[in-house]
Image (cartoon, rainbow, N blue to C red; front, side):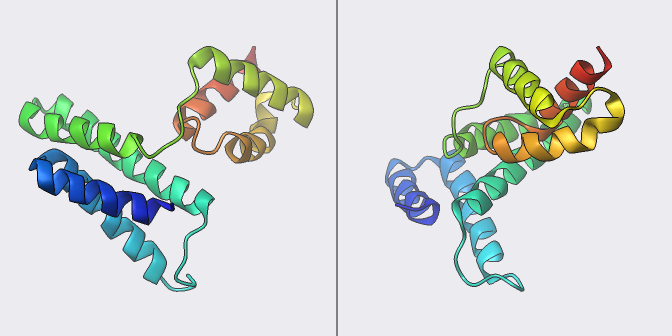
Length: 150
């Protein structure tokens, strides 16, 4: 069952349960899927890696909004963003722990032959492909900088 079918099934359950937070989040995912499928150059189907990128983008948007709402003491809006993040993350693969991520990045750095922060682009290219959906790009970038400058 692909992502779109999963979302539709979850939407039915959320409607039956009258779960407003889940419904709001699932509708956002469905809208993003429809936009991606009908965008210029799309063939009407999404590959699994495109679905992962889409979900990661939605989570990142909500985390950015959450940060802003928290800074501005808008707890009412921050709660909504937290709810949506939790629901969207259910459709993403299990995220790697900090230790697992550091170990994986160390291996990737050795494979690429990177030795200094100047080689960060080379490492990031490999890391984002290998760790797609398993870790946030911002976290990967921070750890790569840390490992290359050590």
